[in-house]
Length: 354
Image (cartoon, rainbow, N blue to C red; front, side, top):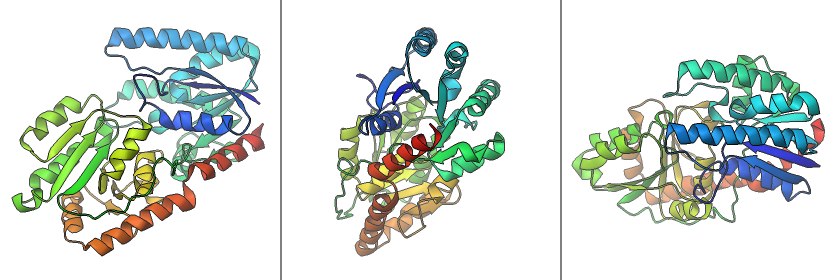
């Protein structure tokens, strides 16, 4: 089957971290015999004019490819950003549409415009209504969307964003020596609530502060504010966003992933970290609760003040208990979230609806 994959987020030469889950899904289909043609945006604009120009070119490319490419289906990621030119081009071709839902597609996140989200909501409503198949990264996001958008669950499927490549994100046994090496890796936007990590470190006693080191990996509009806040925290380092392979190396050199996000459609970053043996310290949201059992394979923070308490708890936990949590974290990924299992679910979903 020939599939035209359309997305406004995709890894490029200068943005290897961008939309890895989109590439994962496309690669899964490609290695299993499907022909994938790309129509993607693989760059990040540095200003409004450049962003507008990029999207004009991207939308024209979508419209032309939908009209001229003889595809069996159109596979949309981030449909709220790319459905309009698909709809226009598809008025003449009538190619079947598959929508893969992510993050802010269906839910307004902190730091985003309420006005623009109302527009996005109307766009995504049309995309979901006209799709022959809607794929979700997690059951919790399927449940949320089906209620908010009156979606027919009979045309829905769950596949965890391409899954975790355990050959790349391989397990490394930790010593959990001090200083404990903590990490945040991801986009630096308000909805990720990275400021809560700095708040927790600021309020730790000097004695405990000396026992941890935090690395923040990523880029985004909150970077400058976070760096300014951390200026007086000598145990906090910043690194730019990195590609797939280097991110795995960073995970393997750290002990705890702290991820206070207010909303996730899955949580691929925590799952990849868990595969390497990192202990996840996560916010109390539905998608994380699908794979984390508190104190068994990770730790859940139930309110904003819990991050400090949980860091203190980890520092007072024996190495043996930390190793057990680390092992359980890796086993969780191996049992339910590997690349192979995700491929199987994605292929089954395509097979059932086409």
